Image 1 (cartoon, rainbow, N blue to C red):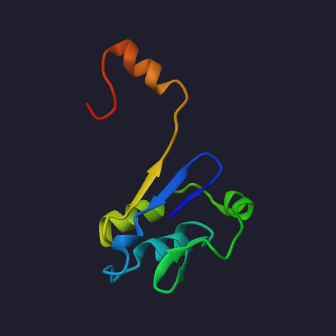
Image 2 (image 1 turned 180 degrees about the vertical axis):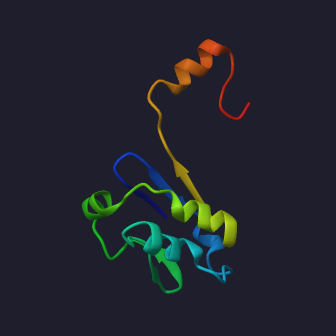
Image 3 (image 1 turned 120 degrees about the vertical axis):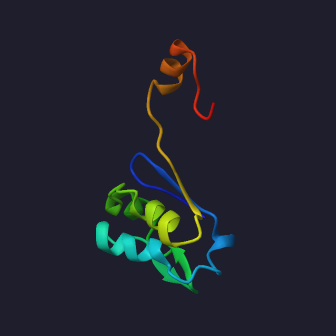
Length: 98
């Protein structure tokens, strides 16, 4: 499952969710954000909101990713585009991941 907030993309590998006992991502979203992640059939979901409402309500706090990594099944990855990063890394002779 993927959804976008204003400037980030949240990617959830839902194949890891059924075995997750904590559902820490949903709890973290309620505590640190506006609760856009909710459980739907024991899976994290934003299906109760349309895409524009997700963008409006999302706070880009990254709490779901951290909670999933810390107490869940490491199923969440958040992409954060940083304008000019690739050019900067090329200029200094390095790259992301290497």
